Length: 152
Image (tube, rainbow, N blue to C red; front, side, top):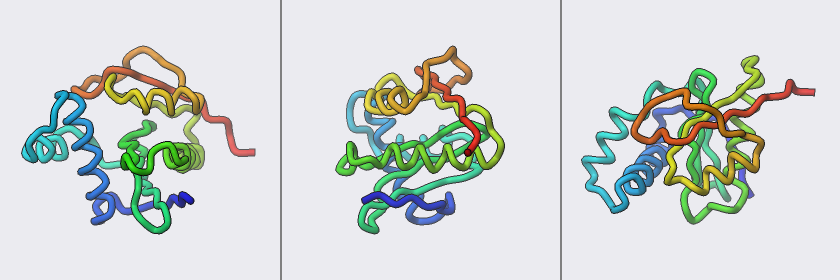
């Protein structure tokens, strides 16, 4: 069973998940496992601004995934491989979408890499639609957005 809570971005739990996230991005982008210095570089130079809000998902008390909100964009959406296809991605999306609504945002956007096919399926099945490019970066090949209905 997944639970999601806000977590400080700099907490040890967040940092472990963000390192795993960057490891997967770098390895998939290059098509092979990369040295740790490549992951370190990505963490230092390619994550962009710190999130306005950051969430960690847990399975039976174990950190299993994360997602953030930065300037109206969904970011750093990640679920550890062993927990994929168990509802964590949707739980994390719901947390960020709820935060975005609470901040008065009408739309949520995300850019992602062409290599992250599982993410494309998650976003599209969760109401995100492909849109024209709105950002640049080494891991930005696909762009999505979702209108957020106000809370009832």
